[in-house]
Figure (tube, helix red, strand yellow):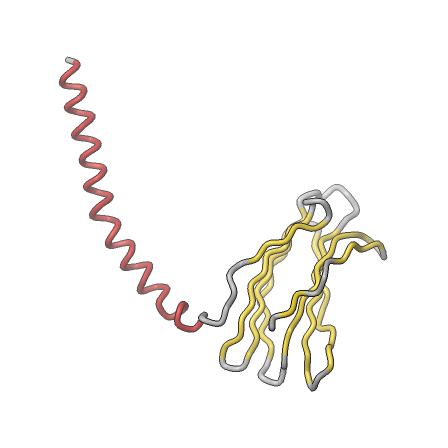
Length: 146
């Protein structure tokens, strides 16, 4: 009886490995063809970067890039402690004709995600992040694209 159990377990294991070996090339080929256009157009993009604010109550993830003269910015804001007064803040700035302009301030008590595209007339972008409430903010330093 013991040998039959070992034989059965070995057969199941071999079958699982064979199924995985046949499925892996198919899924790899699918992933490559699906990501090929994205990878070609996203060569100027950074990977996701994550920042903690407010003593780990807030979290910010962002990635940005430049393609065909346009700046792209994707970001996600999390606020983990929804029961306090603090918000996670995110400021976006752009530079045009040598001057910095404030684009918009984003904040959340929960989760927020946004994709932004800036036109070809924009020279650079920068972000600033923080945590706080009312007029009591703890701001991080500016992060510049260039």
